[in-house]
Length: 304
Image (cartoon, rainbow, N blue to C red; front, top):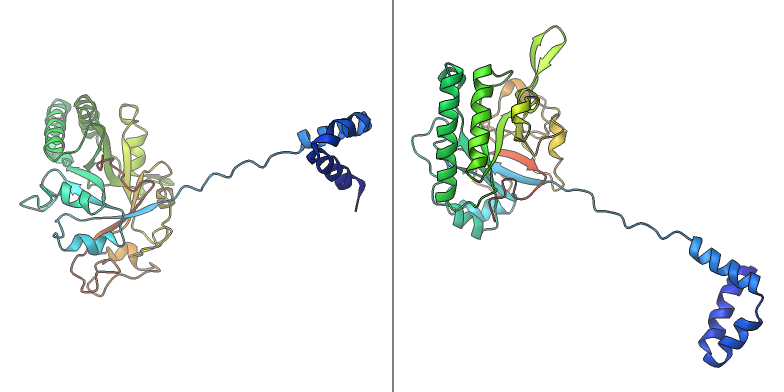
């Protein structure tokens, strides 16, 4: 035993005897007492370790899967998409009126509104007019569905690569008008590089993110190319959205149904024989879906 542990334990033992404590400390060499105190003060307290940020899985699809599907899908997913408008290729919005039921099952939300195609935005004046109207319609639909102010509405942009100037004008006024109505803007767009020239590539996400008029827009990027995509996978510890190649993305869609063969041929986790992706607990393959990872179990803040 060294002298220092003995010196530490002896004063404590004697000080426990209240009668002897004062007398002992008064007779103990002052230099030793000061040295012990200095050692105690100088010993660093370990800093508390912050928990590593975790990610959450969610699904999206154009058609509502049905009430019976929710308990099954909730076993694998923390959040679900929710369309405020007609989804692409659909004649009806089957999500309408389902917010409370999804909420009762514990789902968070990815709120979606269909964006325009470039060919619909013929000039800047038309783009601005349409952008204002789409924002008003989106905000009104969100309010009607019970989504509170401050929720993020993701504008669905299906085309990839660099967007024309008219589309940037559309996005700018859509973002401003939506914010004015009390909601926050986001976009669902491509995070996949498109070749623009020798050694020059662009993603739609970067094109939007780098536009000064749209810097406050949240990004939900899709990139189903393997790698970085794990394919039709449902990891218990999902990768962060930044793993998809867009470092600032709030959400990454890494699997789509049906699969795109030109991008998914080397995926480690395979799609079903029919080319779609199904949740592990969907044994009967009833609900094909797209798979996403996000930094929040409620990426749109729609559960508030």
